[in-house]
Image 1 (cartoon, one colour):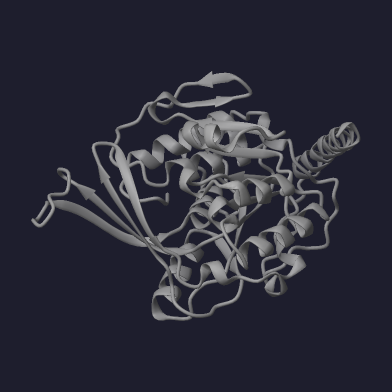
Image 2 (cartoon, rainbow, N blue to C red):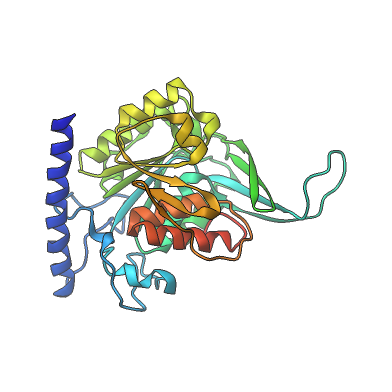
Length: 343
């Protein structure tokens, strides 16, 4: 354990040196390295352009992200330090049906509601928010081969996310019922959980961060594919994060699979954290309207007008991985102020 910790500490020192080198290239008029524009692959990895870059704030307004879009005003002071951050999100792309109820459902009767249909799924949400905040984002997962899958892929692409992975079977659907700030989900994952290790391409995992949805660790074959994804990302010195996703997923097999991955970062609600138990990682505990706890320190939620909490945890994860806890909380607040899980 000591050898592993020392090795990772040394790696972070090297990554920090790479950040300074990369910043110098940009200030001198160069372009930050990132995902290749064509072919779904990144250029050969130079592992000195690594992480740590997002913790230093910049006050420049109107900065633009790696996707070429202007950074939202709330995130602009962070953006100059992102410098081509490359995030890969692994898991599901699903049809997201949001049902915002005016009152609790009445069994056997009608309830007024506002609805939204669009792209969703935890991994897809994280990728979309990462792109929105200025990072280069890639989604890896198995998608359906039906008309719904084509619409979902088009929406995610419009949001600046690169999609890779096989297309097979039918698209999954997740229905989110939201009422008085609380939500409940009903999920049908379609073909997403059938992704196999042999269907992965090593080039997809040349990145700074690999983020895994806990839903991808619930059962095989996708759980084995997730393990292979971590191996490929770690070969490029990427840091790995896992969102525990749902307390109902957490059993002995799930704990074993997560611990075997040795993630650097874990995202969890208080209930998920208690159910999972200990793990040597940096934990960001989501506490709803109370904010988050990171390394034993409480950070209050950013002010917002609460409309729908669907996807707020995914926005938080993307913001934290791209730019630190403050950007994560700002992204979560933006998500809560609108209907739906994507920016």
